Image (tube, rainbow, N blue to C red; front, side):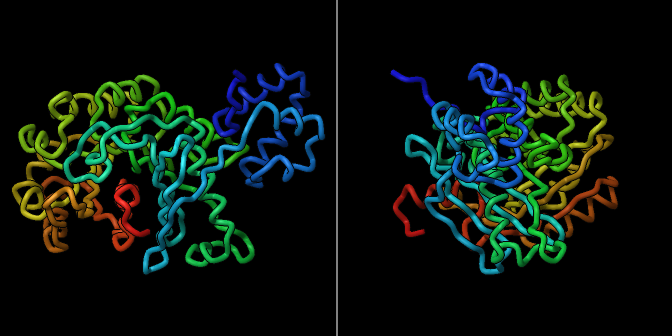
Amino acid sequence: MPAPLLNLYDLTRPQLIAAFGRWELNPVHVGRLWNYLYLELADSFAAMPELPARVRERLARETRFGLLATTAERDSSDGFTRKYLLGLEGGAAVETVLMRFNGRVTACISSQVGCAMGCVFCATGQMGYTRHLTPGEIVGQAVHVARALRKPALAKHCRHAPGVAPRLRNVVLMGMGEPLHNYDAVMHAIDILRDPNGLALAAERITVSTVGVVPGILRLAEEQRPLSLAVSLHAATQAERAVLVPVAKKWPLDALMAACRTYSERTGRRIFYEWTLIEGANDTPEHARAVGRLLQGLPAQVNLIPLNPTPGFAGTPGRTEAAKRFQSILAEEFSLPSTVRQRRGIDIAAGCGQLATEKSAGSPV
């Protein structure tokens, strides 16, 4: 049985150079190939005319484009968010969200099909875990968004120089899956996304969000990776957190906070602590003070996120007044900075896993 074709998006430039050596091709052509992949965003070998025919023929025999096909997509009513359901080999699908803000474009990408963490308010957690994504499937989502930004209709809401297409500059691994559960593939993909001759994403513009996988946080600290880290907290006591985030039973709150302290001490970086506001459950002044006490003395910022409702969870989003009160307490009593995340794509089920769940259930998209 022939070996499967290599996904070009799985390969770093050093790996491509090594492959060219095995194929007895001149590695001088790797730079041009890389430009075609990540700057010109070519979609076929025929779209690479400056590569010699012999190189293109060998690439066609040994490799494939890992472009992900759109199986469904939705645009928000305000025109600032587009959500894609992207098909994978084997019939699975993952979600990718393109979000446009004033002056920047962010891609929210997935790291797994489904998720094993089981957060009760998350559509992906309710879905369960299927498999890890490969590095190329992670990179392919960023490429998909970069290609989409070349379309004039999508560029109109972005600030950019006349005649120049907006660039993808921010990536958050906050889509389907737990990035630190798929650590090696995620970091491999990030190395490709950061390559200065490709998409050239700055490390501080890449955010990895974890529900609290302690070994992964400690490994990030050990490896000193210059990324932004977000930790999904959602509760400030072990008992309350274990209800919302079942993995807290494996990695209790005390162990999580110890790992976060180690991370900040070794890297000198602050952590973004994410707090999904659920009305009456974790949005009261008492909850705000509990967060303040928990994070006091740490280099931290709290991101307050109104709940994205899902059919599998009965909670409702915290109200705007509660979010403002929460913010005031953090700032005035604990000197903790916080933001209330702009709600993007609520009308198109932009929370991770929602579109995939609807698609699998047979709902119209």
